[in-house]
Amino acid sequence: MTDSLLRFRQEFPILATTNYLVSNSLGAMPRAVPGQLAEYAEQWATRGVRAWAQGWWEMPVSVGDEIAPLIGAGAGEVAMVSNVSIAQAQIFSALDYQAGGRDTIVMTELDFPSVRYVYDELATRLGARIVVVPSDDGMSIDEERLLAAIDERTRLVAISHVLFRSAYVLDAARICAHAHRMGALVSLDAYHSVGIVPVDVQAIGADFLTGGVLKWLCGGPGGCFLWVRPEVGESLAPALTGWQAHEHPFAFEAEMTYAHGAWRWLTGTPSIPALFAATAGPRLVREAGMEAIRAKSVRQTTRLIELADARGFSVTAPRLADRRGGTVAFDVPHAREVAQALLARDVIVDYRPGAGIRVAPHFYTSDDELEGAVGAIDEILANEHWRRYTGDRPVVT
Image (cartoon, rainbow, N blue to C red; front, side):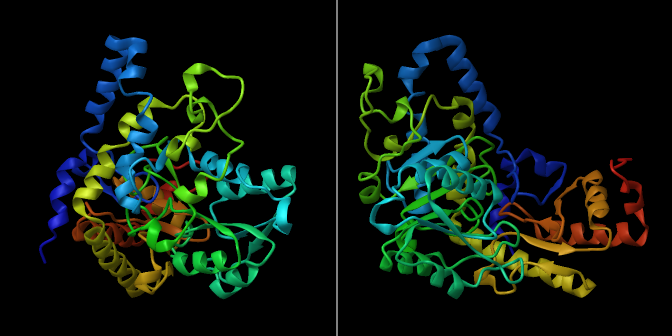
């Protein structure tokens, strides 16, 4: 079968020298990024402070416009922020947990810890109540139990779209619809879905959506995004804010007057280099097409599960394709050491305790690379090459 998406391989230099299977952690760098960063340096060197008035100041929103088509949002609706912890803190800070008897935030045990830290600590200080829905198997969330936890006391449901430990996909549209019936808002962390699973904020019905370009969007660190449903956002005033969110920032007024649209959700001076690097990846993803990317991901992750099953490896990933994101983890004997041995062979994966070796093919991954990675595991186990990486520090030879 001809894989038309492989035409994009030439856009990612690292693919020439490695079997890159870790896009769930850091997407491969597009070939265009060094030129974009050089453009930033040239503008700083030659335009100096004038660069702010010649595009830099608008970049948190203009770069957000590059993300908007990938999530079904409109122009001027996506704000670029430094990281998702900040974005989620902004959402938390915009809501009142004392009015109308709605003091509760519903989360799950399997949400990304950084987001949990934000909500737990802010709730302690601001008088909100956190309800955490547990997982029975450490891989998925019982959605009936989650829906039951959303009640008349719920102000916000703050959950992940794809669970980071297992790539389990929650039925976000169903959860949003129920939350709205109960009078609650929904904040969806889509960091592990945008770029590998089609996302449409209109169809899902979320009120807030956060994510980043670091992983599946191949945009590097420091480029995260926050979308707020316009009719919701205009009624809120985030306490975590800054001068870019002011309607008249260069008037330096003593009192805060919030801007509109995505500008309302900015904070202080943005990280311009990260924004320069952030656009090449999303443009390639848009060109490849999310439907084609998703179809390939389902096919390749299904094949990984077949390869693991044939060897008797324990798989940490949903068996149902519509519940599976882009990552398959499987536990092999001596998995930590095997992962180090793979890295030494330029087979780029990662390892997580309790899950094993995580393998994340993307639209630029060939089928042969999947077979090659699992074949390398076979060889490392058969020849006991993993023994070179025992102890506290791996020995790379």
